Image 1 (tube, rainbow, N blue to C red):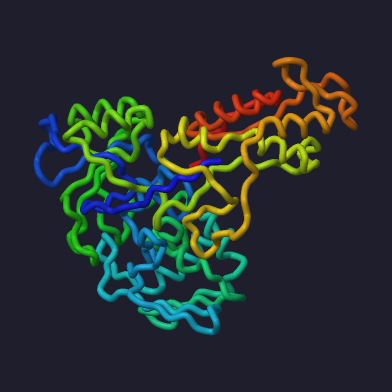
Image 2 (image 1 turned 90 degrees about the horizontal axis):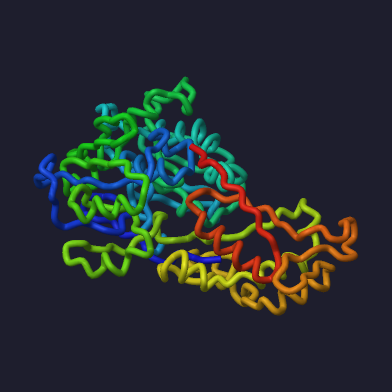
Length: 417
């Protein structure tokens, strides 16, 4: 429906997806140079980004780890734990040469064995996106020596280099996780990484405290300490920012954006939630196992009833763009040519629903009339599952579909860890 378009920028403190910075502080505790307090919307269940795609975990934990590569704002690979690489056999074999002298936060040396273990024993088993994307094409990942890792693929796979950053493939320490269950290892709550920050402590789900990794191969962060304070309510986050109780927000309520932009001591940084820029679409997917969606006319009617621009204006408050194709425009290698999504056309949607036998009287919801296998008078109700964080999307979708006589019933799901 809507597509975020802002790019990810890295501040000197190495915090990725940050939107607002408070330039003055009113607090006395920790109010000295070198300390930054950032607001988190929720306490992460753990700090192991290799076993989950949960955004809250990654927002907090990715600062502690590295991937083989990083991505710039055009999704071009940049060195991280790997300094350079070779692509051989027409793209079916990749050789990565690892950075020398890197140590884990506990002082143990980082080697190719950590990379092989992270992929074979953890990422390809527990990280759902990495498992789904790389699992079918990876024949083997091996380490011929301590400083080299070789990926053998069953076929050329162009997106590989975009899937080796800390979000999609964080590297974990083999000496801590080998022989354990990575889902219950105590290091998940007291992590050891190679990243720009070291874990210090967690305070009962209220805040996380990190210290700068002064030995970081990319250079020490610009601050000495980072405090991630849990403030679930977005409005309370804004109040804390304006009061000087926090310095950094990962996002602001859209309705507050214009006012905060006019506040002299608050600075906005253009960003996206994903490394390499935004490459995500917010979509509505139809369960084709349900009879009501088996006819393409029903799917087309519901699509025509969606006003994508309204989602940009009312949910994203202008911070995005209406998708024009089923693939995000940021994915340059996969940008479709000549593929367009249907326009917003509620009259056409209504005509299609009428042709399917779903009729309405006045502003009432549609009911079946001579629909095969459906008793006459049955209301046209559609179930919709969403996460709580997408409530604004669900509310607007319900209103748009209600305008053509479709009753959307929303079920809110619990967030996975």
